[in-house]
Length: 500
Image 1 (cartoon, one colour):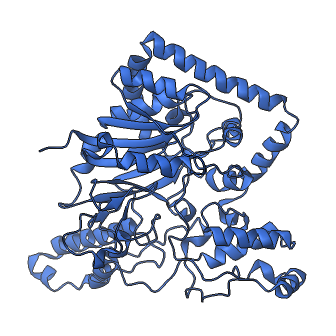
Image 2: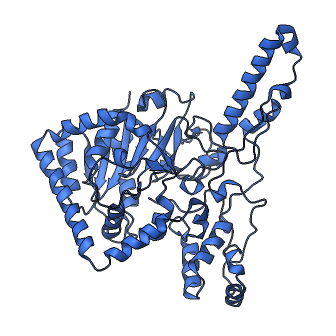
Image 3: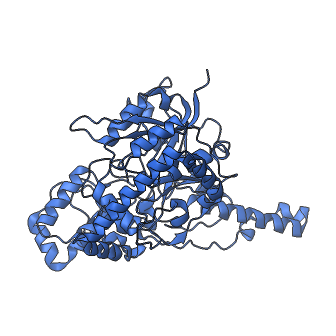
């Protein structure tokens, strides 16, 4: 029996009424036939908007009644996993309201992407591309995909978190970044376990076996943007970001949206306009939705709510100070972000240790550098198939080349050999050595300081810092270059899963 739905989105929302219609219209336009949204504690009418959208046939809305002491996001994930309106689908994508799926192949629709999956694919990891403020200061209720087209470069490792579209299976547990296996590591489950075994990246290439068990980030060897990426509009305008600070977030983290977060997520180094190919179609669907007078009224109410909150911000005594902090944070160059202390993605033990170090007087900049060293990307993993293929064909590969770039170098070498064969004639081509035609590789520009991994993985470290050593480090400045004194260094996909 075929599933009820084909392409399902599950999302959790609170006070997203200002951009909800665009988000729904966009994902309907690119082919998602089933959108399921859970809401909790909305003040701007997002829940009422979704109820009306459900009556009109655009979405399905469910309440996320969070038990005392629980967090909204994990609670919604548990509800969704038990809801057949989510799971009775060929594919499920868990994502947030500030994320837009950007498909680069075909006409940019979801079926164009799935048609390019290798046979037997169970899941795809879509890597984020952070979209920044585009230096827009004031509240702007216009279209997200139209207003915020500046984004991070491919090599921005700090932005390599993933969101996953997967086939719902009996033995998996939903997560905000990716589902995990309920019963342990895949190599111990046996062939009968109903889990996700075949993962691919955003270029359609196989993910390593270890990703079947853990990991919520791409790495230098798994990153892929050729077919799809996940546009992440985490900041929007400066004032929109300040509103996020006011209303909180779905995981009850009151200090999450600080200037450090803004410095990391406000990336504007290059243009990213792929989503704009759908602008005309999205506007048409938005007009269809808003042709309903009730829906139009609800959206107007949501816009008025947020505009009133913005005016409250402007009249507050802290507005100018907050705005100045964001502008200072936005000015931090991408090459200097290792000096920005950002702890949201770190395990709780690390966060507690950092608080103790701050209390002891260690400067945030020094702590940030320690974290950057301790979360360094490990080197020494086995070569990827692309690198192996390049070596077999005599193609030199820059050390920090990404998989898609390696593939392009191989393709250029093959084309050059073909041209040489045609020029020399069929007989001469048989004996032409591979390295004669291999072009001089051009090393990609490493715009992020993490692009080149450290020479060796960091050793295990004692869990508790020595206060005397910390004091000495502050005197001579060595704290800025020492790894964070915690239990052990983290792997490349370190940290707990977290919404952003």
